[in-house]
Image (tube, rainbow, N blue to C red; front, top):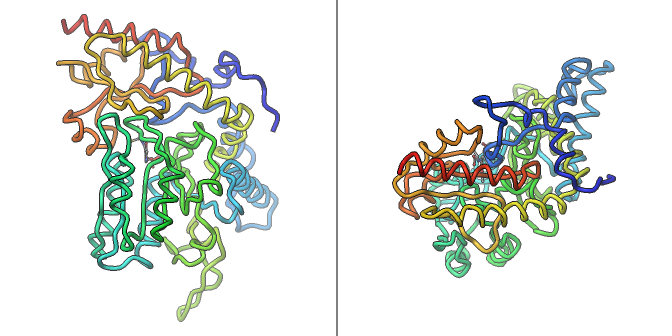
Length: 409
Ligand code: C6P
């Protein structure tokens, strides 16, 4: 796909939501790790499906159904291209990252994990990559092991390696932490785990759409992400899985579309990827996610990565200049997420006062309570950038934080 030169002002014009005002101030949206705004092309793709293309997929011989099926499968090809997967059948459409991880825990876990087997995750996981494994361990008698991170928020590789034994059957690790911004050395982690014969699931929720991802180069066995964090619709996502593994796994849910034949005596299952896509999918959402992939490709992941690193460097300097402000997550290899605390000011107060200035950030534990426990804090304020943010917006953020400090002085 042809890429235009990177121009943030042009890019901003594609996002209608950037134009809204909050408290009669222009909106500064810095909550992109929670969800991203949608370019007009994504909004059009979803609206056009409902305006003139509404139909179910894989079920009809009529024209609209054929067209919807073609657009739906085209979105699968686009995601395959984005992730550099070997085949489209390795792309399973889900509701999002959470469902992708639950699918693996439930299907792979139930079929292949046994009592005493070990699962390794890290201390910086989102709850979506903790709770499904705890549930599996409770059901099957497996053991969950936790790889720690240091006070910069970097995974301690030697400690992780020490946890890997021949009993380790599965490793599930976040690529980029949503509360620290740390970029984990995921390729090395995957290689470590494979040496012990463990399979690896990568939580790519904060990665896809920010870094170029090549699942063949990483050699991950599974990777999950959400459409709404890659400038696509909410309610859709992707689980990538190696064909050889997906083929061996039992279905996650039963219902329409995932079967080859059904009798009361015996049901046989559909081929990949449909075996894992029971019921009517979010057709418009998947088509919208395909449009989001097109949009990302038109800007170029390398350009996005470079620009977001510039924003991170600028933002880190700006926030470090505020006396008393402490950044939580100072890894050498980081992406554009800045979590911080201010002495004696609760993050919820920071969030509320920034909102009055038109600045949207997230405050709380960010669904990573163990990360908060590590730093012995209840919550952080988190500014998270996307490629449509600007250094001027970061200046506004810094000014507004100074104002918050004045209010509490
Ligand atoms: N993090 C945040 O504000 P879902 O909800 O399924 O789209 O994504 C879950 C998820 C899993 N892993 C990571 C690393 C994530 O960041 C998230 C979602 C949002 O940070 C909402 S809690």
